[in-house]
Each structure stands twice: as structure tokens, then as C-alpha cells.
Length: 179
Image 1 (spheres, rainbow, N blue to C red):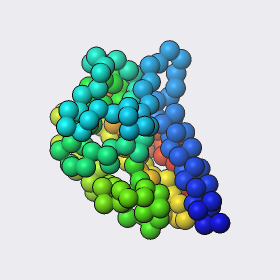
Image 2: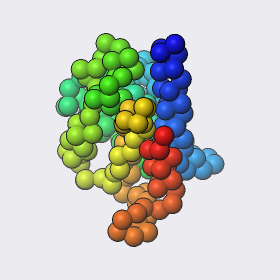
Image 3: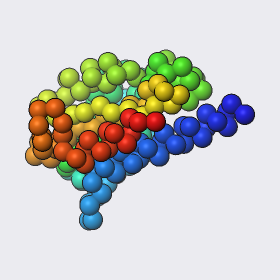
């Protein structure tokens, strides 16, 4: 019974992450979107080069794969590569290393999962200090998944006030962070 309930909660959380990506990318007509969610879609961690030209896609999403690149340096190179092929921005989701159910959510990989501090450390070393925001999805009331949204210059959400971003981005965060 427990594995079934956990799988249902994980599936629901993944759907909410995809909804947050849809809000982030605004899914306008005629946009080119690349969504990576299988390990065979990523290049080898040693080479970190996607087979696409610069700015090939409007938006790029990488779902639960960044932890496959087991070092901080490789994860930063992956983010740079995703930014290289995107024109407007990237969206990264990953399981929270410290969620009590992480060992079941990502069997055998708990030691390579990220924390919010790890994610911030990745963004801090990106060239140009891009605009970014970190959201989350909860399972059993605790942050189970993080999603990182990075906007390229010129595509940042407009600030409505000093405390809030535009309604679309705020809606994505509210949808994903409530449980």
C-alpha cells in the first residue's frame, strides 16, 4: 500500500512540476521547446555537449536529470549547455536530497541529489548572473522537489513590485508550492 501511495504522490508532484514549466514558458504558439526527461537524452557527463546549435529552442526543461552529473563542476557545465541552446530560459527540476522519502523517490541515488543550497551554488557561478527563481513541490508537507527557473536577459518576468513578480510567474510558484 505504501509504495502505491508514494507513487501516486510522486506522479501528482511531477504533474505539478510540468504545470509550473508550462506557466514559466507560457506555452505560446510556435515556440520551440526541448524537454529532457530521460538519461539517454543527455550527453555523457565527461563531454557535456548537446547536439544542437546555439539558441535552437525558446525554452529548455531538464526534469530530474541534473543529479546524474555527480559533481558541482559537471552540473554547472550542464546548466551552461542548456542555456547555450535556449533562447529565453531553462527550467530544471530535481528531487530534494533531504526529503525523508528521497531514498524511495530516487532509489540508489540519494547521495547525488541536490539541496536548495546546492542549486543556489550552481546559479551563483553562471556567467552574467542571470535572473532566477527557485520553486518547490511538497509531499507530506515537506519540500520534495525543487524547480529552478532561469531567464535569459530580456526574458525576465517584469517586476510588479519589489516583493512580487508578474502574475504568470507567481501563479506557477503558487501552483507548485501548495499541496
